[in-house]
Amino acid sequence: MRSIREELEFTEPERYELREGPFYRFQISRREFVATLGAGLMISVAVPTVLGQRAERGGRGEAPLAQRLHIGENGVVTLFTSKVEVGQGSRTQLTQAAAEELHLPLSSVRLVMGDTAGPDDGGTAGSRTTPASVPTIRRACAAARQLLIETAAKEFEVEPGTLSVAGGKVEGLPGAKAFGYAELASKNHEGALKGEAARGVKLAEVQEWRVLGTRVSDVRADDIVTGAHVYPSDIVRPGMLYGKVLRPPSYGAVLAELDLSPARAIVGTTAVHYGSFAGVAAANSFAAAEALEAMGKTAHWKTAEHPSSETLYAYLRSKANERSRPEKKGSPEEELKNGSKALRESYQVAYIQHAPMEPRAAVAEWNEGQLTVWTGSQQPARVRQDLAESLRVPVERKKKKSKKK
Image (cartoon, rainbow, N blue to C red; front, side, top):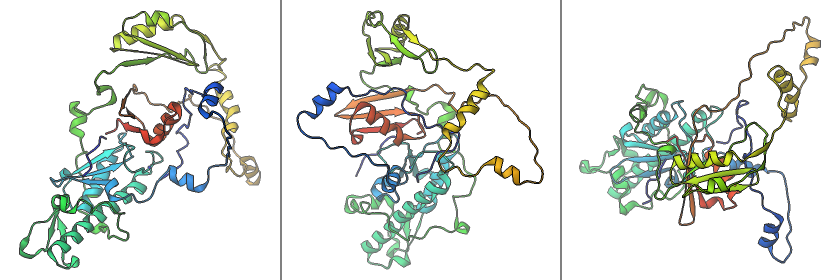
């Protein structure tokens, strides 16, 4: 039985969701490149992303039941998804979907979100959780319920069609015998969940719903209100250091010169400078802040020219075509020519940057060759991939954990 871990159908992001690359790129040098390859011949082939690769990046279809859910010996079922809760109620909705098909009360269903070790249902974007992830969760849980029935039927030598599930227990067994999810999780049936989710399982019809579509309290709302919910800034690991990054004074600024000695003079502090990246690590946040301030005083930046507030609208408008999508078709001007009457007016609104206002934090830990990262993200798999590329380690050695638990 696998241990319970902590807490992507592929869809294009909505227009307001920016797809910027990593701010810092730790490029391999020519010396490192040659040292890694050694003598020999390297053949490199670059091709555009093929459809199979694109599908692999997004929704991966039906995951094996053992990857999708865990059944505890106490009868509690834990579901895993890459989706995260960002205030839209997805945790409650997905928990309801699972409880509906498992025929369990909400209190017997636990949902682990944003963990890349689980199935990849895509990022939380484009309002896709309801149309994509709810059906996926329902099918998996319906398959688990059907597996429960089939296992009980075989155990007691009765026809599966005569059995049903209520409250997590199989009904219709001879002599009112007890058999539920807890028994399914026993050692005698430990291999039952290793196969693919059964195809064609029957989902509950809308008129049969007992949990879905009903008003329930938000799952784990009490933790949010009382402060019991754990965020990355709450996590403490053995021997943990606190890091701070030297940020540029303005967008596009390039670090030209930096002296690390003032920061390194502070006892217990490590300071690093690699290309445009500079940061410090210390035993506590106070020492890290002190070292960062000392280091920042020595920094010299090459700043880029920015448009003023008066010219910002015209600047953004002139740059808009550079980001036009290739599939964009038609011309508004041509369409206006075909109209019997054209009305024209221009409106300007204040510039709005789609960016989180919350303070961000992340905790990283190397343990037995694996890097585990706790952070907040709507795209756990994408962050995991970016980390693997930046640190030049296989993706399999990285496990991205979201704060939206």
